[in-house]
Length: 227
View 1 (cartoon, helix red, strand yellow):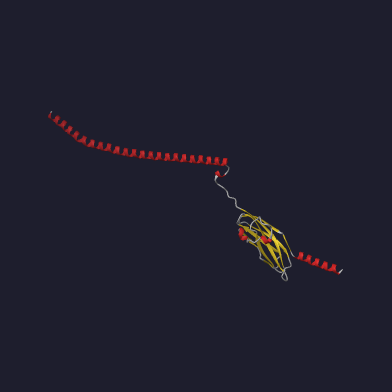
View 2: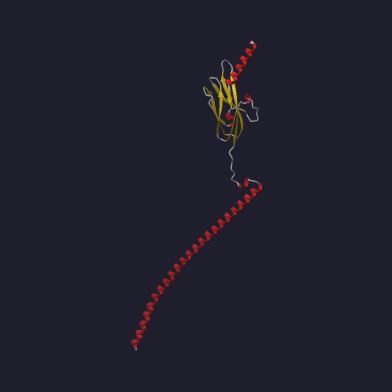
């Protein structure tokens, strides 16, 4: 009877210990794009006065999910993680994560309880962060398939050739217009010069004709008087 009582007493102690210490969920999964932040919450059920929080990360995603193998800092993967490092009376901890390197990264969030004596209870919440790289939009039409690329390149060449032909035609028209303007200006100058010469010739002829006419008129008058 006494032995059964002692056995039940130890079972109650173990049950109380299990109930007193717990957390949920057991795993946090983040699916983010580069430099995008995501936050999740862990609920803690503990009678400890203080809980210390820290994180560790695996070197790569192929390593076994084992806390002792997770020795890297979050910065090793370009991850920035933010949470309250000490829980005094709080029963929840918010974990915010942001990554700058694409890929899948594995880590663990450790919650260490302070116990009387030398005993320490450590709980772990697994962390899985998948960071997707930003999509790069290619503007080059020839970057597609070989068939589509050659077709796009051919179309681009044709458009370029047409543009060159249009430029040549426009340049030719400009040259012709300039030549026509030059010819018109030359003709106008020639007309002005020719008109001036003709006018000068007419003036000289008038000055020459008047004396001749006077001489002829004088001769005629003299002849009439002699008669």
